[in-house]
Length: 116
Image 1: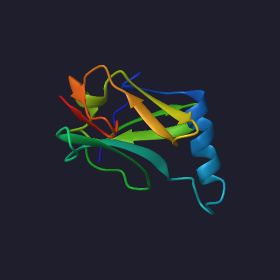
Image 2 (image 1 turned 135 degrees about the vertical axis):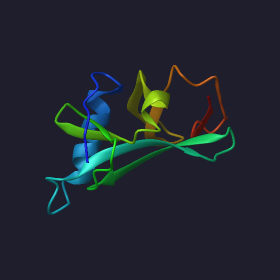
Image 3 (image 1 turned 90 degrees about the vertical axis):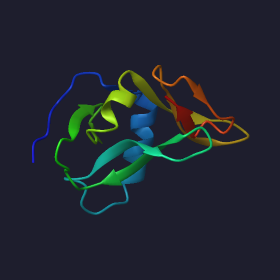
Image 4 (image 1 turned 180 degrees about the vertical axis):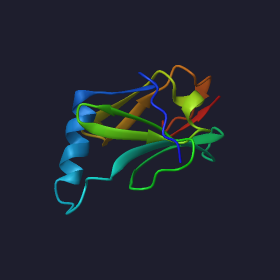
């Protein structure tokens, strides 16, 4: 398995990194765990974003580290995510990760899916 490093394919804000660290704080063994960011078919706009913790390294993964957080993206998702900014938003209505993606040509009202 090869793991390539591409500089600045996504940007993880410090606020998002702090939230990731807080989620990982309760986990016993986090040495091999990375935040996997992916674009998958589905969602109301055609594609949806997926963020989850993963200890797997898939063939063709792109891996980088920002603010002490390891980020992995699969080969198919990488071009769709290039230049995207992952942030943590908190408001009275909702809180969660948000992705501002310059590659998306449209999105749905919920903000969880996009059109490319």
